[in-house]
Amino acid sequence: MTAPAVRFVKRRRDPVTVQTVRSAAAATVAYVIALRLSPEAAPLTAPLTALLVVQVTLYSTLTTGMRRVNAVVSGVVVAILFSLLVGLTWWSLGLLLLASLITGHLVRVDEFVPEVAISAMLVLGVTTHGDTAWARIVETLIGAVVGMGFNLLLAPPVWVEEAGESIEELARRVRQLMLRIGEEAAGRPPAARAAARLHEARRLDHDISEVDADLRQAEDSLRLNPRVREGLLHRIVLRTGLDTLEICTVVLRVLARTLTDLTKQREPERLFEPETGAVFEQLLSEVADAVVSFAVLVTTSVSADAESAEERLASELRQASATRDKLARLLFEEARRDASQWQLLGAVLTEVNRMLDEMDTEHRTRRLFEELDRHSQEQRERLPRLTRMRERLAR
Image (cartoon, rainbow, N blue to C red; front, side, top):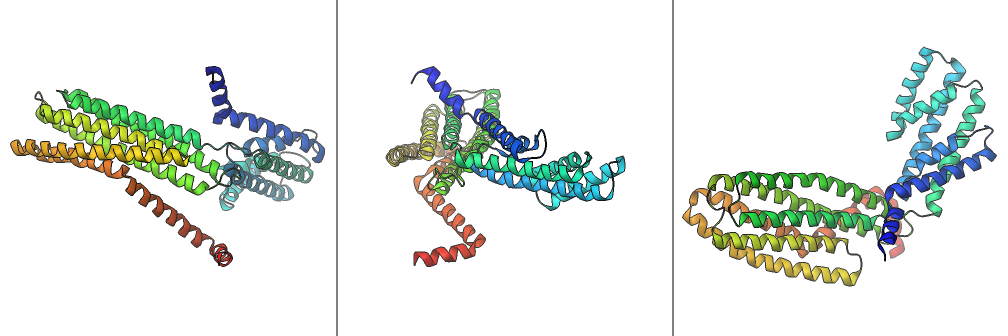
């Protein structure tokens, strides 16, 4: 595939592009329908509602649409009640806004609380309150139905691939940082350089928040999507994978802090003995490769590819464990020669152990089963009647 074609496909699947095209199309269709059904000459409420209801994923469209219809209808009802009692004055407008905002919180429309007040003001500000109120309700229903039907008939894309790319990119950034830390730790790094690596490790928190946002979008795209089978399993695999990578970044930050403290104590001497430094650099390189392999395993959907990725990860973890044991013997010898720093030397080994344990394939499998059991238990508690019906049908 040529580079222009690749860029075109990426633009076509970009969330902003998809949101723009789908929203514009849905708003246009809603306006055309409202022209025939609404008594208003310019029924702009319908395209406005469709524009705000249509979201990137089917799940968010359904939930947003219901909340928005609830918000608009509540605002119209409040305006009708006020129009029967008082006209439009400065004090009645203030009371209307107060009542609308309180109503929005009572009916639990979440982020659409201001929409309750907006709808009430638009209805109260016209002369023929009753006709305009019912027209606005009709237009709102048209816009919401068009917006939700747009995603039902034209199912939105599933954003799992984009979330997987974000997870793999995060793993590669972690790998690059680990390689730099290992390379510098094998020599005579100044305390300022070690502190710079610590700041880099802290900045990974921002990267994790961005990946988490992409993953939440992917999770929403899997919910209630007719194009997806085993959506729950996909969500759990990606979520637990990101959790593991987040733990590894936290441990890496702690490791960078430990090396910074150790560098300050030993400056201007070497951070480790030459042999120990070489083994430590090798270990971080192997752990860094395992982090990338773990991310590939988490984001691989094809069974054959997943099995190959799991075998590669297991092999890399075994090699890293052997190097870890060699480093443990060397650090023990250094601690015997200089007992004042045995705590920091032991912390280095402990933090590397934690990352290896988190990526262990058996630990990952056990975590997946625990999450599946937890979700099943929550569903049984939330929908007991449906659960009993399924059990009867199964028997």
